[in-house]
Length: 470
Ligand SMILES: Nc1ncnc2c1ncn2[C@@H]1O[C@H](COP(=O)(O)OP(=O)(O)OP(=O)(O)O)[C@@H](O)[C@H]1O
Image (cartoon, rainbow, N blue to C red):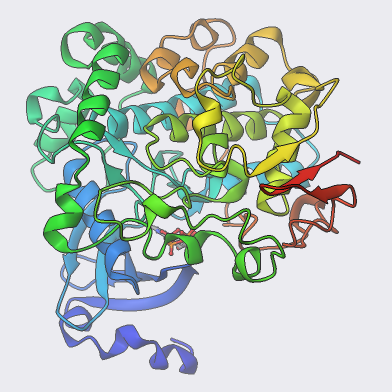
């Protein structure tokens, strides 16, 4: 029996939806959406109905998912879109997520075995590689957005902040799909639950083999991105009259980040280029803070796919240690945590970084002895540390691409990744993130959003403020 309260859900008033789906329960909600588990009446297939309360977010998610055809990206079955009503996306239903995998392991006091880790990582890499080959930057990668099926199939989800960095159709053609993706496209009835997924060993092996023919090189990617930036227009958003950044800040930074910040005139995520500037700049206010790349924290508006690679590095680190690597309580705290590990961001480590919009607004005191990533990854092997280092590095151009990582020797060395059927999949969804649960994972006391609470040693300067680490 459906609980009484359920009848008041706005989705029940959508005649076209309840004619086709029986809504069973609400399974999640996010900054932009409510998500329901439902049964398709015609064939009993279980789906997720995502009612998206933000036009721009719905548009982006639909646009990206229509392009992507990867076994490691959530399937969009259909969508309902009417003027003056929230869009409803019908997605394949995935019961749990990677955050739950991490939380359960932690609760049980065990680590995730290396062979299991490798299988999770390979699946994330395959999904991300599919996005990046289509020049789609996800912009909100985190464990709660990596959904997992009962069979251990991991899928990238929540494309509400995704952007396509090139004109649609430029790279997303059938011929550009990897063999495993072509199989997915060829499935006669796309509305069936996925068939047994080919083992990722084969999947990634095939991906390696055709890499040189069918994927763009890093150099080509940067060339295309430069062209895109030079054009300085965003056709998608121009056409739809949607501008990047209109909603992202409120969705991803807590209100108090902005409202309570005594220095909000000196340090702000409301990057000039990101809000309705008509120039097609990207907003720096994307993603969830713990996984946000330093260039975003410094207000960059012309970043690329590499912001996802930073997030990926943070996710890999968390898989190794079961703890978020940079659990910042506010945006400046986020930067300070990164600095204390990697050292200060300077022209030596990333030539050109001083041109980042907020680089001179905030001056951090020199971190004399950064602890290094090794200290954050105790009990990890040199290969594991090296894997994270390839992603969690300042210069975006130095970050390894998803395709490069699929070739990383880490994945071909013993122990081999477990077959998917041997993955340990939690029975429930327990995943939480910084936005949804304060005090989770032993981060009690770090829940404040005040950027300055943790920094008693700050002083105003002519251009902003300066912070000494405690
Ligand atoms: N396909 C799905 N199958 C099952 N549950 C889902 C699915 N998609 C989303 N959910 C659940 O709904 C929650 C919110 O979905 P999602 O993250 O896509 O929305 P959002 O509003 O963009 O969230 P966020 O605040 O993280 O940006 C997810 O954390 C997940 O628990």
